[in-house]
Length: 168
Image (cartoon, rainbow, N blue to C red; front, side, top):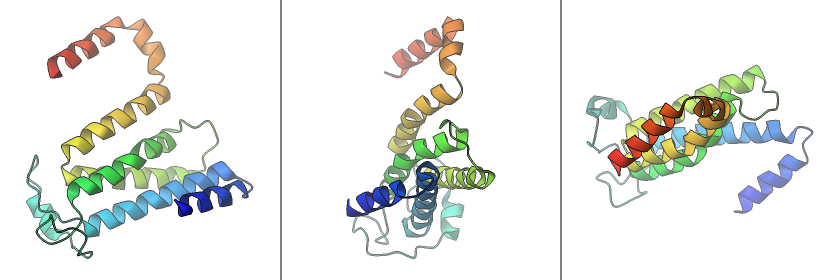
């Protein structure tokens, strides 16, 4: 919590606080993806046959959890941490914030979003997938201007309601 307040007060003192905040989010997301890549105990076999990929990934951080075979970070914990940042990354990448974004930030946001999505897929966390979808839907709604499209195409509403009824 202290780190959050320190960073937020430091960002207010910069000449471009929004741009600085974007860099902090992008750096944090890349750091989190890197820690997730080398710290997660990739033991899971849930949805996708990714064991050949898991065999190539190193486990450099041990002693984090006694619930995994090699004492690494549990894949669901990694997914939960990544899902928190994913909507913000998607908003930066989609340019939802109406401030100018430099090419460097656009490239960095694309790399960070891709890294987070790849690690999220590797976790095979079903709840992580659902949370990512729920978190990113409002960003897609705003950035793609879906409000206008939904008003003009009521069939989309009917399909969405039908899908919700089918699932639930």
